Image 1 (cartoon, rainbow, N blue to C red):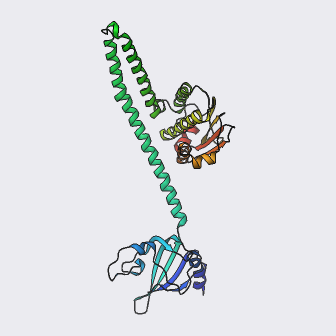
Image 2 (tube, helix red, strand yellow; image 1 turned 45 degrees about the vertical axis):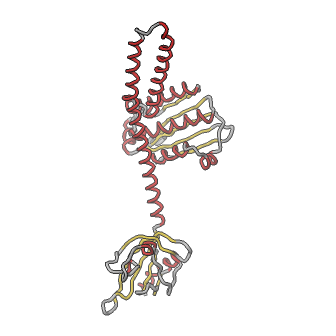
Image 3 (cartoon, rainbow, N blue to C red; image 1 turned 135 degrees about the vertical axis):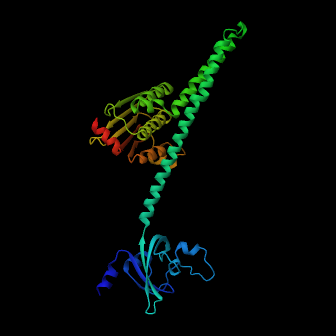
Length: 344
């Protein structure tokens, strides 16, 4: 009697089936999960439906020789869908020792699968961004050490040639020199954009100051920054790089699309000192965040969301057509950064 009560009360699905997979007894949890009842035949799981078997081999893995005591697959239900489940089996022998019945335990692992898929998606996003940053760093190094040095050598050679250029070629020489100087500046700017050297050497604040100076010159706008993080605070290089890219992407979007003459940037610690709050506000034309996120072919907002998620932070967008835009990011420190923050 007690055993039957426990059988009925189990939260996991439990059933007993015979050699032909006919259900002899089933508890309410298994019925709710699958729709099966006593007398129904247990269908093949997705793995068994498509696995290759020998001529005389049992297709059901759990009913064959050397059957595993546990495995995972998807099981068809009477609700017209398949659900991810884990299987655990115990064999109930007859008096002669042969297997007459099998006790099958079913556990719905849909949440586990969803968590695993989310974890894999996060891992893929992290690996993709890390690969992009590694390639950016390589290209920046190549531009600086390769193309940059070659252009510098050409510049030196032109300086020597200037002394022997005839009067008739002065204008042409001046044009070539000016073009070369412009190219060298563009290569240097591209190298800095790909991987800001100030970030690795001097830290986040210095890199942001340099970025703001470049943006103001390039787009003819005014950017005001309030940097309230503790003096001398150094976060992990990965965290500083992500924050830098978030600011870079947001400022670029505001300059290119919002048409805002003024942008305000604020970086300050959270009240509990276990993270930071980044706020970027513009007075541009604004937009509908939901519409842009769903229908825009650009990846700007999605990249911001991915980087914020990798930092285990949150992003909030306040905007409307004609009313400007405010982006707020809350980013926690890792354990290492918490320790550094407390020391400061």
